[in-house]
Image (cartoon, rainbow, N blue to C red):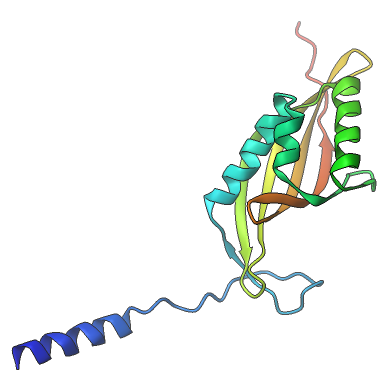
Length: 166
């Protein structure tokens, strides 16, 4: 009898503590009814390693962290499709403006319905344009597929120059 009582108690406790269905929040007009929840920091780590490789100018590492179909939408409306195009654009940008990224926040998230994984990340950027240091903030929304960067969207905001020191 005592074993039966313990079994009933265990089953009742387990049933009452079953994980709640993820409801999520937000929306995306491109996927009607989709909702989002906070994702895993494993996704954030993928992005942080990707940015580290950019700052170190490690093209082999960058390419190894992308899907073959990498797609990038730039803040000026430009599009990059595929690793070859991305490698060419990055090489030219590294030489022309020496971009350096400093991540100041990140939030991984997951689509409840489709299970797609994303990270939205804020970066402070330093560029050298015509010999002058330029600062901007970049917000990037990146999709991670099977541990690889699949696509991302870049939004930039120029920062005013620092006031002169008197």
